[in-house]
Amino acid sequence: MQLFYTDVFVLPLPAGHRFPMEKYARLREALLVSGDFAVADFHLPHAASDEELARAHDPDYIRQVSCGRLPEKAQKAIGFPWSAGMVERSRRSAGATLCACRAALADGTVAANLAGGTHHAFRDRGEGFCVFNDAAVAARAMQAEARAERILVVDCDVHQGNGTASILAGDDSIFTFS
View: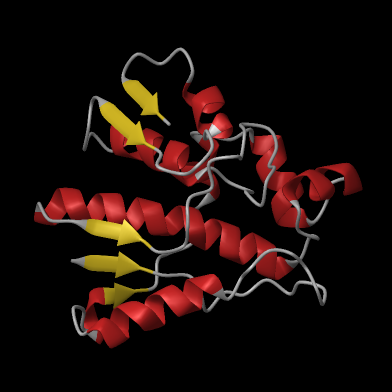
């Protein structure tokens, strides 16, 4: 099994911020301590490129995020203040899902992104601690790379992945289930 992690890319959040960033490092540590996984099972993902992101996101939005030109209202909707660290972690989080999909399809085994899903990011904006939508980015990439024709996105979070549903709406080749 290949596990892709991004917990080394920590957002510089203000003291007392409500997002529990440390949960990702704790998950990786717990998996290592369990004895079920070896250090070699854990991999750092590449950062999703502009091209990979643009299959699911508006290029102007990608530029605003990347260049630090997100309006204050957009930053508040995301829930994170802009920083270079936010951009890097967000790209790596989408990259982790891309890497997990590619690994699973290449090896015929299970692979996972330990970075958490970012299902609240829409085509032209982020919200709910989600900057780029990893599931939509990965689904579009698997199709563009001819690795999959039809895709099922199963979201097991306690609330709907509204950004995923919005980005992929009207595409009969991708079914989203939240």
